Image 1: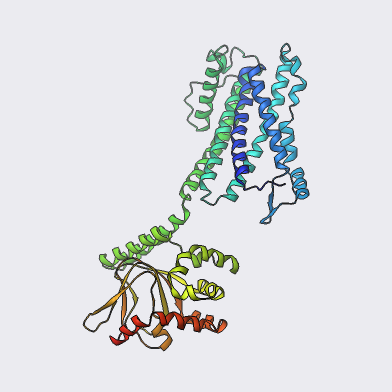
Image 2: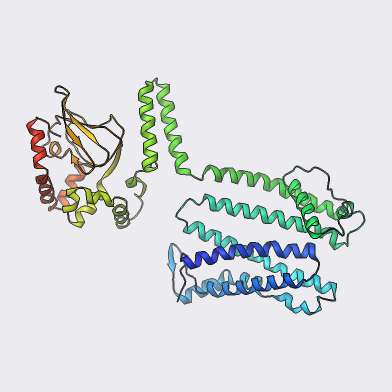
Length: 458
């Protein structure tokens, strides 16, 4: 039995592993720098974590992986892939080599140091942390910007913590010389929490290039360490700020791109002295496009997908459309698929013309949302309304005549448009489409006849 990498259990397990890896990456350096002893409670926590990570290794031998976009479920291939990639690192980070020296740790200071140094191998688990982040970003159906920010924040926090521990470890390794920064701050016998907070404070002000000067290096080794931290901080500061700014601006890249385009249109209209009323009308149209469709047309967005996948996706996205129109309800599946691929989504604002009197019929409109009014120029007479589920424009297109009536949107309208070229193409490849269309038209014969009696041809 294999475990799908995107299964609910695997996601929950990975989330648990992230928390435990962060605990390990915080606890092990802290023990080395500030505790200087192998305490019972800390050892129990460390070895319990080892047991969980051992279980993770077992699960990794059963977890699927993706190769060139394909999920690999073969057990043999999964084992080989894991053995070639993450297994050596996971094994080295999990095997408790420090147990070999633990019996002498209670009486031998050198043995304590060896035990704590061997525990540092567990920091290799941070590699697994970023493997999990990469998997989440690949699987995420939402914006991955938040995951990138979380990953970057994790890097920053871990780096600051590790440098804080190393900053205190430098004078400790020399047994706190009288001229060390620890001695200058009288921290030799201070509680471990106080020692850590002072080290953390120095790391933050140094890496952010603030440097108040209240804690300063005194010995050559401390100066060398401080120089390295300053150089790293200067480089990382610019990198981190740049990345955070980029990630925050791209959290909703589609929205930014859409409104940039809308603003460019507005600027152009103002430069051409377009009346404010028309400008506001266009702005309202863009606001509706974003609120209703997030500025994207389904047909254009998924054009790169294989046709069979596009058909399945469009059936899902336009499921209500297939139920609302007689033409779709009566058509065989093959014709419905062809229509879905051909239909072009269009939106209209109140007052826009869906059809205009005098135009040569070249399109059929399917109204999926909103209402419109049928009008003619002869006396400005109204000839009824169209609502969601109606389609129109077919008679003038089939007859090749000019329209003698208009359809004006009375609210924001969503439509799907079938052009004459697509209509003829579907009719030529699916001859039965003509019969379906005639049958559907017969159901609307009464209303069409009323309009024709009023000399209105849509």
